[in-house]
Length: 436
Image (cartoon, rainbow, N blue to C red; front, side, top):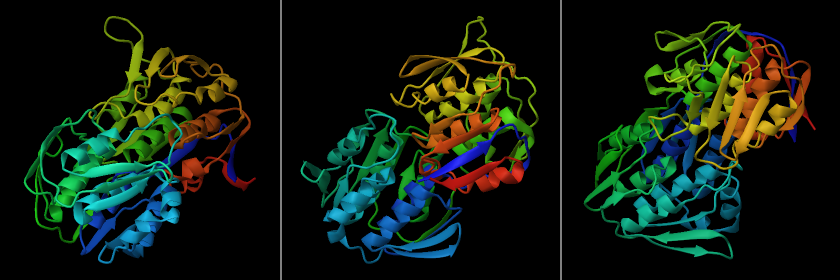
C-alpha cells in the first residue's frame, strides 16, 4: 500500500485549479445508461472512484471512448444485463459506493436491476432505505438476496407518483429521478435534495429529452417521456476540493488563488471559513486567500461559542467539517463542530490530539476545538486515512506540523483528489508518495 511522507512547515503560494466534482461525475456518468445514444461528458476528474465506476460500466457493456484525460463519450447501446447477476459484479460493487447510482437508470430503462451492497468510506451507517422506498412507490418490487448480499429489483411498468422523501438524500434523490424520467405519468418528489450535483444531473437529463421542473428547489416535478437521446455536459468544479484548498491556504498559505471555482455554486462554504476568521477575497469567479498570520473565530451575536454544523443543501456540506475542524486548531478562540449525519466521521480527531491539537471529543457527533493561534504548532505523526475527507484533513494538519509525518492508506485520498501531491508540490509543499 502507498503512503504519503509530508515535510511540514513549507508555505504554499500560487494558483491552483479545482478538479471536476466527484459526486456530480458519479451521477451523470450513471445517467448515460438511460439512452442508447452517445453522451459526451467533460471535466471528468481522474480519480479512483470515478475511474472504477467507468470500468464497471465497461464491464456491463457500455462503450467508453476517452477523448482526453478529462473528457469521455459513453454509449450504452448493448448492455449485458446478465453480468449484473454475476459474482464479479457483486465483488466490484462492494468496493465502490458509486455503484448504487446505477440502480435508478437500469430500473428506469430496462425495468430491472441487481446491485450489491456498496462500499466506500467507513464513516458509519449509510442506509439505502430512501432509494428503495422511492423505487417501491414508482411500482418496483425488490427482494434482498441475503446469501449473495444482492438487492434484486424489477419494475417493468413504473408509474409516476407523489412522494415525500423521509430524508433529503442526495444519492437517493438522484436515483429516484433517473428511475422516474421514463415512468408513465408525473412523479413529484418533495423533500428532494437540491445540491448543485442534483441540479447538474437534472440539467443533463433535460438536455437528453427529460421533462424535469423545480430544479434547485426541494420540490421536483418529473413528467415521464418515452425515451432519451444523446447530449453533452460539463461537470462543475468540485466544491469540496475548493473548500479543502481554502483550508490549506488558511493554515500554510502565503497567498493562494483558487481559479475558476464557480463561486455561485459554493453556497455557504466560503462563509463557514469566514466564521473561523479566515479572510477570503472573491476575484471574479476565483477566490484569493491571503496569508493568515492570525484568524479569530467569531462568536454568535449573544456572545455564545460558535457552532458549525452540517445540514442538507443549502446548508453546509458534511464533507468539509473535517477540514474546518483542522483549520480551527490554529485559530484564535473556540468552536463546536457538530457532525450530524455520520456517527464515525469525527473519530480521526484522536490523531490530531496526538499531534498536540486541543480538541474535546464530546461524543461521536460533536467536538470542541480550542484554537492554538499558532502559539503551539502541531507536531508530526504517523497516521492512517480512514476516509476521503479525514484523509485530506490529516494531510493539511501534516503540512502545518513540525517535522515529517506519514499518512498511510492514501488510496482513500486518491478516491477523491486527483494528483493531490503533485499539485500541492507545485505550490511549495513537500509531499512524497512512497510504497510500503
